[in-house]
Amino acid sequence: LVNNTGIDWFLPWPPQALLAVAQSFLGKNPMIPSDQFENVIDHVVMVHGSVEKYSLLFLQKLRRSNYVTPKNYLDFIHTYARLLDEKDQFILGRALSFDERKNTQTRCLRKFGHKENN
Image 1 (cartoon, rainbow, N blue to C red):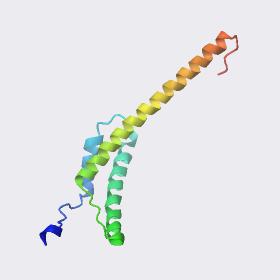
Image 2 (cartoon, rainbow, N blue to C red; image 1 turned 120 degrees about the horizontal axis):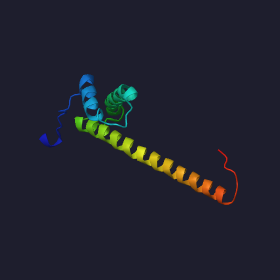
Image 3 (cartoon, one colour; image 1 turned 60 degrees about the vertical axis):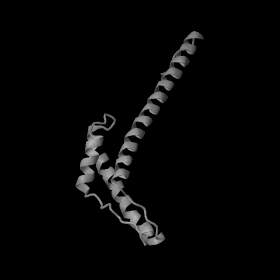
Image 4 (cartoon, rainbow, N blue to C red; image 1 turned 135 degrees about the horizontal axis):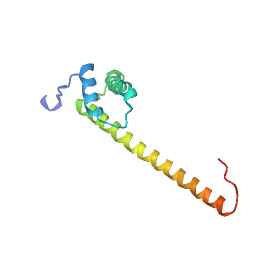
């Protein structure tokens, strides 16, 4: 009997707690524009809430449990911040690559006596 028993120790966090945690972890991120900060925080809270809602539907339809824990929420926030940084570095690299190609093209045009087209 004890071998197949599971206890659900995790109660859902109230939205205020989710909001406070997201603000605490993402508040120092310079990649989030200040005018969009509240929208990002609200979205993070909404996504976590939707996972809780769909986990209940998953349990009802397929009779399989998907536990949504505080660790999941923290991992989600950390993954969001990491991806934000990775994508910024990727875009910056692409922009620098574009500038380098444009400069090379300009040098070639000058070398062969063509006028530069802006």
